[in-house]
Length: 436
View 1 (cartoon, rainbow, N blue to C red):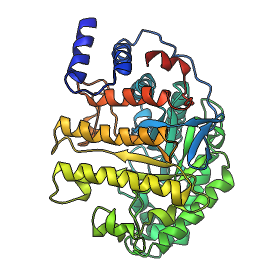
View 2: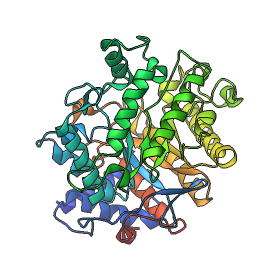
View 3: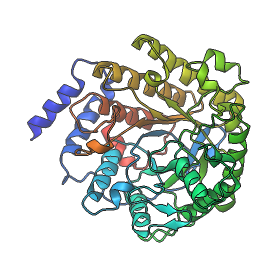
């Protein structure tokens, strides 16, 4: 078994120059550890967590700077509903902890879909709510904090489309447009009730209300909001102001973000120099304007160059990625005075080689690391997405299994080791430093 593990390590890092010498041995040890489930390295005991706070452009925990090195696994709640699939969730969170990762972004919604959390407005499935309880409790056990998203702009798992359908079915909807989610008073009331129910939920495993649980990093109002029927951005701006204030009314301890993709709005000069293409300024979102709202604690930015451009080559994508990230970090420093989290990024495994994907991911992590070293606003990155084996139905062309024989997972271990040396990083578990 040991021979296979070392062979796996050579496949992953041999000849690509990924690792600095100081972290090479650490990565070998960590991958051995991830391959032996019965070996104990101090991760089995529950880690005491404190709330993440913000001081200007920095995340803070117990007075020390906190940097995000993490991932997306949107599927944690839906996979925790049934006993047969629940071990996947533990396996994923345990793997993240072993890699030194700090935050996982996941869905805290499933509206009107199979095993829905909310089957109709204000009607909740207790079995699915207990599944979310399990996710939070398990994350807490492994010292992972969760960024919980509250609704989807897209159709998957119901999203704003489902809310509009409910209002239409009940005869109270103002419009059949999906964007009425943002302006219809009845739908706003539905969503506020949902927010209140989530935030005040008492976890059946830990006994802690969600709003009082430091295992939750923060709340994301909506995944990738767009309101294309109002490209001025006024409708979405009003919605963000109302919903962020409502969250803070109930929960004053957790951080709040919007869930933006990062596109500059119709009146921002950067729409011409930084946005991927003209369409990006006409979506009804506005990175600067939306992020300046007082109840928004940190900003979010996504990175999908192969989805945003047409007929570009890989080298052009890489130039865009660097400009995109540095522009938003500059915004965080000079305009917003808030942390900037690159909360989704990925490159398709269908149209690009493993080497190209590795190059882009390493570039993103390097820029984030350099921001941390210089005490700038780049608060960290969350890759899209991590899975465990046997989850083809949840995969897409960005999926990564952390223990696969590829060079990409080692990049995130390297990042953990580098960040652990930056300004006494408030890592969840000091014992991780022995691997660096």
